[in-house]
Image (cartoon, rainbow, N blue to C red; front, side, top):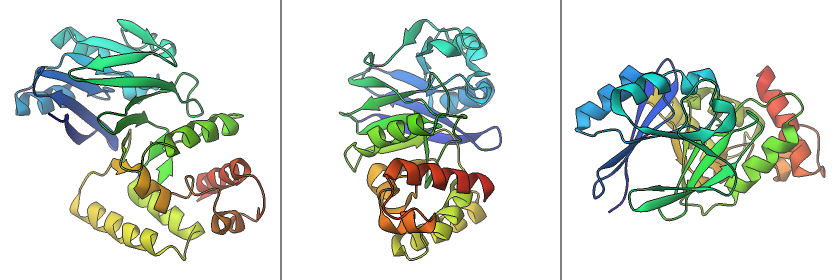
Length: 254
């Protein structure tokens, strides 16, 4: 049976997320911005949290981990640099794998936003937990001097099958869509997605889940190899990684 994925708003714009395997009755929290919110979401569905997956060390993703572990006894796994704020039972690195119910997640080191950032990638479930590397129509802020690393991380995720779902760590969707439209104004698919983002915001609908194919069509950072995006930042003919860096700097100023 497929994994059940529940996503909800926590803090102001963080994604709270629960994965559930109905056969194994295993439940994983993906990062823990607020332990109370995560426990309430699990209780509402009758799920007992067994695992906590940490994508990266930033405080807004780890600050509830210790409390949730104390309350549930869940096993915690994540990158080494998260150990200062999250009680890790297992430190993960590139090339590791994590079994969860009937599925397995490959561990990819995807730095750029943070040094130790990990993505949890399940080819079987067509699901990647990408933390703050990819957002709907956007990507995370990049550490100084790490543009090349971030581009490498994005490029790996972009190469996943198009129907792979990407779960990001925040809902910045409307802001991202407005920037995307400013640099890719002729993109009809993007125009429709911007309208959807405006409607979602007006309705209070939380939006942190997307697919590789949807991002390939509308995310300017995924589209850095396209001539229209290169032209938008005055870098026609430049390598895609350079276009990405210029787009990300433009987003910082948007």
